[in-house]
Image (cartoon, rainbow over all chains, first blue to last red; front, side, top):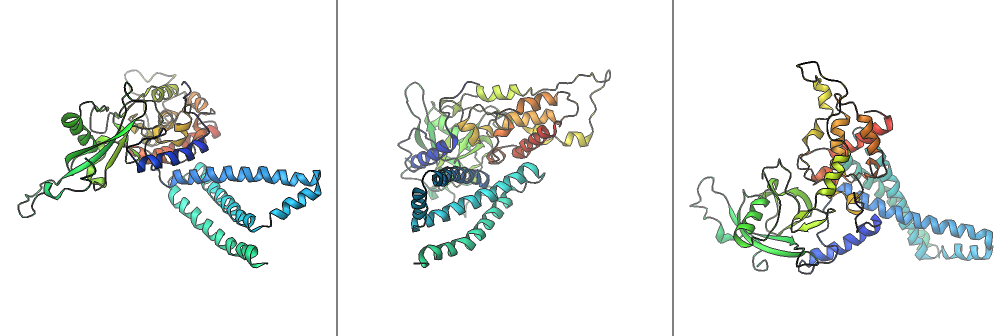
Amino acid sequence: MPPRADRAPSAVSLIWGIVATQSTAAAPAQPKRMGGTLYRGREGMWSWVLHRITGVAIFFFLLVHVLDTALVKVSPEAYDAVIGAYKTPIMGLGEIALVAAIGFHALNGLRIILIDFWAKGAKYQKPLFWTVIVLWIVLLAGFVPRQLMHIFGGA
Amino acid sequence: MAEEMHGVDPSAGHDVSVQEMGAVQQFTVTMIVRRFDPETMEEPVWQDFDVEAYSTDRVLDVLHKIKWEQDGSLAFRRSCAHGICGSDAMRINGRNRLACKTLLKDLDITKPIYVEAIKGLPLEKDLIVDMDPFFASYREVNPFLMAHSDPEKGKERRQSIAAREIFDDTTKCILCAACTSSCPVFWTDGQYFGPAAIVNAHRFIFDDRDDEAQVRLKILNDKEGVWRCRTTFNCTDACPRGIQITQAIAEVKQAIMRGRP
């Protein structure tokens, strides 16, 4: 097949697609370039969207994390300054986002493994998705209050 | 047009006391169609139509009424109009459906119905897309019986009920492209074979009368083959024949890992 002109990194184009199509759906008289309504996929599609977003976010975190850890070799003082910055409340909230992203990505990853390798995985993908969501909320319910106390209660 | 009448029109209905047994409810429905004329337009535009319709009507009937009574330039494909030919796959309220199998009574007719072409294939006009890339992928998987032995003279190839059952689901495909054009991977990566091609490969890979399963498994064990599937289940939801497509793709993935069907 010939390559299509609109080929682009899928996560970026998907996010752009959601932004563009929602604005179009709200004002049908003025179509935007991407156009069309947002495709109304169900649990499977949204789990994939979340998996992509959390995956890309975790990748960028790891990139920064490898760089800041590597700083200790270059300059211990700079390393201490960076680690000190991580103790601010904004970074504390960022850690909540990080744990949420990793938690979802890990649990949904197990769901995808079951879909691929368990004979009945595809049949039960929707219950599996809601199981992932419940486990994820339980995980965050255990972590978030403690972390908030840690950020705002200590000082 | 649409501004003044979005909901059910009470005057169009019947008085309950005089309503005959079996009389069909009539109402005005607003259909917003995404139109595109390659000769005059840069971008597709939404156009709304108010149509008198019955609760027994399908989306295809409303499109017919628009074309026959309001605007003859509206372009869409349909052939059998009974869910067999697979010509009229389109996005109805944001989901891929066959217009001839979608009843108005199953949609929320108090709101406008959005109808647009399927996504990921080049738009030609209004609801018509270029299906060539779709059929090219289909042809690539050798969707026909490849047997090395001849059946007994004067006999058919025998197959047990259990052996037929294995690929029964994937024999139902009508090649409407509702699945392939619902796939987020296909939207952004037109090289991907797409669900329909894999379904039709599955139909012969698991047929014990066929001798070339390995060839098809090799074709699909490609960067743009089954491994592109991200199990979003959009295809399974879109299939008008109810084929468990994601399941079929998973079975082909496992066959590739096993090295045999």
